[in-house]
Image 1 (tube, rainbow, N blue to C red):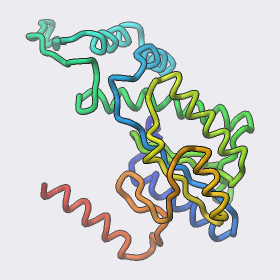
Image 2 (image 1 turned 180 degrees about the vertical axis):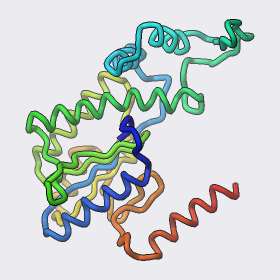
Image 3 (image 1 turned 90 degrees about the vertical axis):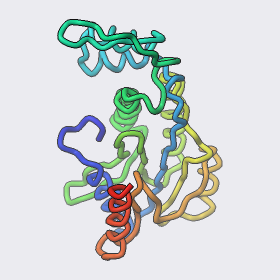
Image 4 (image 1 turned 180 degrees about the horizontal axis):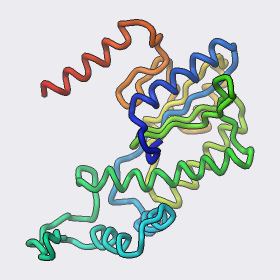
Length: 237
């Protein structure tokens, strides 16, 4: 969802709840894998960023500028054809730098492509929802990524292969200690075994995705009140 025009944070929240509601209603089984990334932006492979920018249509000049920002110890801004005084960016791009969120989206789009390719080849089975049976394999908004899939051992192995490939290519590390595996209609024993395979924690519904509770009854006023309180808190700080 990171590069689809017109999409907003709330779209992911609505889709996630729709998947869970349909699985419960049809008495199916489903797992949910919530990924947590280590925020080590300075560890990301610069060549991978350049490759992803090329795949996304950035021309050579733009790629050159970005890589120079990453590899140089200082940068300057060109205003009306004149460069400003140079300023330090230290160790390339890190969390907190204004470019970091945008570069993260470019890097994470590589993961989106890996998942799409795996689904297309029939190696990963997401959850089909709606009257047209649209498959939902994962949701991605900024650095918030969650997987949905049929409760199959092969799906877990596929996720493990996807994440390992992505780590090797991008050098962006997954924080498995904070990542969570949850289930809808699955046996606790199966969930525990799969969490062990993924080296992650077991989680429970409801859980928070981008600060919004997922898996609660979204028709209840109390659930939306939590969101209202969260927005009020952000607006007053």
